[in-house]
Length: 306
Image (tube, rainbow, N blue to C red; front, side, top):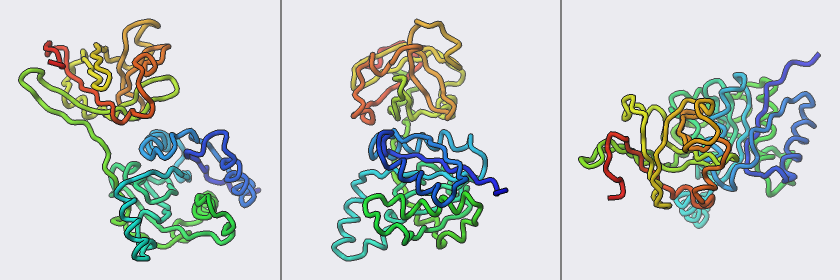
């Protein structure tokens, strides 16, 4: 009777119709026939690191501790691109931290990914990181030239799922070398005209057309002080709308005004029940990160656009 393997989860931008998913799973099963593989999502927008990190960070804690989470979403980063170009001219590419593949033990889960900024989006506090190792390239897959997730991440995922110590699958890696990237964060301010104001951005639009923002409940509650009636102004669309804050969809009838609630990850969602709000507002999926939203409270009656 074999020992129970830890779960291996997969999050990527490979696409559901891609053969990459089948390749990766087949190679895992060829090494570990009893592997338990769970797909979190393969429909992350291509190269959208922030959305991929959001999806995984919102779900991993529902898995049993010591689960192994493989994350494979690359991204285009102007700063990293310029550093890479300079390093190529100087033949020092190997010294760049963002080309390293890492295994990170964080909150008693294992995360395997490229050090491209993902870990700074996943980990709310690097002090909670328990261990980090740099992963070697597995020689068994030298013939695979265009799918680095296999030679760098696959064997490590199998080993960790079989309870091999993280210290044995790579070399120690300084936490200070983990790549960090800047993301947009909400701006809280007070004006004489509008009172308390929060300016924030759209983070993601899900398959139901719900608008998920980067405004966390903790930030909102510090400003709101129990106020529930709000107005939102979506700048790029020129739309100002009144919203009610609810705890769940069951708190509203089927066809009511738009609602706002905080999802299980703690972020504000804007929604119509049984309708796609993003479609109604004609929000461009390819431009959502430029969509700025301003929130103010009904107690402040003056028009936000004035």
